[in-house]
Amino acid sequence: MHPLLDRPKPYILAHRGASDLAPENTLAAFTAAVEAGADIIETDLWFTADGELVCHHDATLKRMTGQTGRVDQTAARRVTALPIQSRLGLRWQSERIPTLAQALDAIPMSVMLAVELKDPRFAQRAWAEKLARLVEARIEQRQVVALAFHRPRLDGVLRACPSFPTGYISVLEPMPVEHSQILGPFWPVLYANPGYVASAHRQGQWVCPLDTRPGKRLAHYLRLEVDAVMSNNPAALRVQIDQLGAAAEACR
Image 1 (tube, one colour):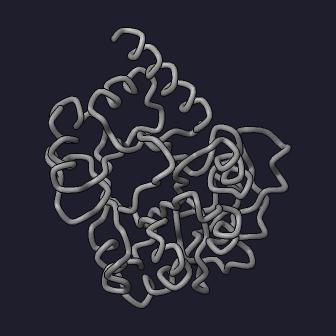
Image 2 (cartoon, rainbow, N blue to C red):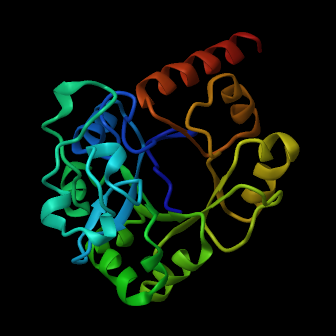
């Protein structure tokens, strides 16, 4: 991966944007993450029924909009017109499910974009090419990475664009796999195998634990020298990292 040269590790990854501060995967959440100084912003991608890429986590619209229907069976015009119903309050009802194109306009090139491939159609080259074309400039700058739990979806992206950086999210694998630049192991793996990060680094890979609320585990991640840490509140995570760094320095 291209390093974020002017930023110290661990990089801060805003999970679905700053999703504790604004509804997840909305332009408001992405903007809040940028303002909080996130190094990487993660979002989830589905295709609509008419082939538009939208930033949305679930297969259905129910949780975020209260409406029935699957994203992949609904036209983009309807998906992007539905008001968000957020646990964070009524003031967010003006937010909508954004298209990936809108997200790209909202997130500056200086912030890396991590797109999690939720739609199974990414395994097909023709569908993956739609993504590759949209983020072509970011691929050239190494400022985007495609993430997935399912290897076939990453394979589809690589067939469409062999230079597309990829990240593999895993739950059970106790050792780093070799086929992706970024690894996202479920956090217990880093306790069961404390050598995981060092092994990945020997293979030239970044590690970002799958843990949206690191809390007391953050100190362990810093000791292992992970490359990135994710959070729903990137500003609060930055404060935690700085405090732990200051405490470690004081003990030397």
